[in-house]
Image 1 (cartoon, rainbow, N blue to C red):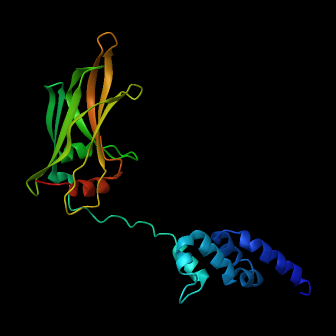
Image 2: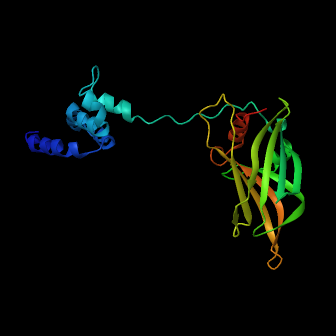
Image 3: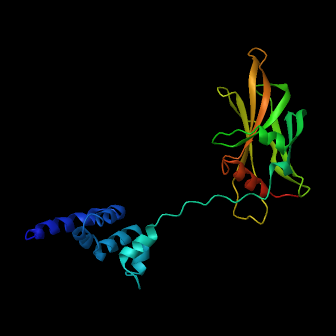
Length: 243
């Protein structure tokens, strides 16, 4: 076409204003657009904008174009692969749950993995549900209620601490639950895994506003910081510091 000159000048004026993903899309429009958008100077500007400190020291790549360099730096990370089957199963586990009101023991139960697994929630946040039967009552308000949870492994004959005397210092009156948490202690062979909390929820109903007594009918344990499925929970528990 004889009037391509002004047309190309418009493209050369617009393309430097685009982000990398938009410029890459322009390369798919036509051969002419691809020729203009392939100008390595455009990609050099994008690389310098995205990684200015690097290109101050190394103004040009040694063995590839700026276009290829930009594609390498901006390539999306692959989707995480599904976890392999964990080495631990719920049949190997047992939970030991103790609750205190001040220093008085008000609940103490050992629950096998087959029990709290079968009662586990199937929502987005995978929760282990400890049955409470019969129910027990605790005073609401200023009562200092705390919880400890140990996990036992039958396959290794070892125990790990999940929660150590953590206080239920937050009460959600609208959801009728009290929350406590503690940070998990992981094995030294996993030095980069930390900051993961175990959350314990007391599920209750109010017995009477005047008596300020709540009736506890369930206990939930979840690891929503890092695990939202059965497989992830088992992998997380397998990494604990088992003694």
